[in-house]
Image (cartoon, rainbow, N blue to C red; front, top):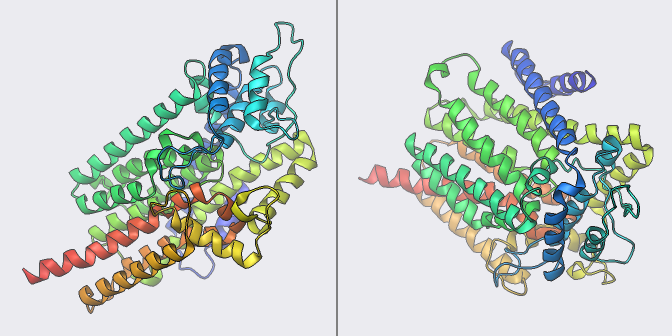
Length: 474
């Protein structure tokens, strides 16, 4: 009930200064309902799968521990070491958390999300020791987890814990990657069948540019792409149902319900990687469909729609995130909440070191903020063993010049409002990098995938100019 009331109050505030309609409150009711149902299902599944006993996953956990021990914590899949870097460190911690969920003390165990890692020891070493010393049937000699990770839901356990009953981490990664691929192929097929061939091509180019195939090699990278792989075809199918096309506010109601659900699920599953994708790409799809149907109603009105839609996703994401913190504060004590706030502050402006190496020189605030930008963009380029800021900046400047030339040569006298809206979506990842500059500087090798929407927008808009010009010259 508290979540429902907060959702209404925060959402109504976003309506000030924006033209509203009587149908908005009806939409909000559907949004609240879809949000509550989604959150309930997530939490229910989390607690349900936690009852799987440690003994049922022991064999696969041991195999996974052996895998982590045999590979670098930050390994690479191809010679291009930045765009294909694995985060075995994060996956190992997540696996460690899953292993130490106590089916006899479900609530505390889930909320604390503790794992075993003595100070000064590598996480793969600690995990190997833990699985090599399981408790006996009476619970004797049980390894006690000593590090809390309570600020996230770690909802991916809903998928991973049942899978660990049958498969080790290497196989699970591949299963999740193949599942995302199949959903993506289905989405592209739907686009092509409905004559959205050009957008389908741009989306594929975007996925390739951010090395989305790495979802088959690291669980940490998978979750936002998994949410998006389900979200996009669902949104597209609902929006293109012709029987409901003329109903007042139908498309926006569908969009808001989908965004509310995706915001909640993203906060539940994600490890703070590329969370903005589940809003930016979905909203671009919404604009593409409405633009194709000639339903764009002017820049001012469309900006209002985008702000309200962003509020739906953002508030849903934030409420789900803070729900975990509030529960942790109630059942674990206020220290859990204070630590979460401390980490949030650190992610925004905490210190970072050269090369992300412990003990190395701390970079200045300016270097950290600038690095949060260029290092993420650099991962779109095929650097091998070292990234160069000069090369990255040259490529960005050349890209900007080429984009300007294409726009200048093929533009029309009529201002295209939808392209301006696309541009607003394209800069959202950049804003994210700046706000969470410490996090984006340190974890650039996966946060850069938030630029998927930026690449798709660039290809779609510039390609659209050229296609329109070619049609006119025929």
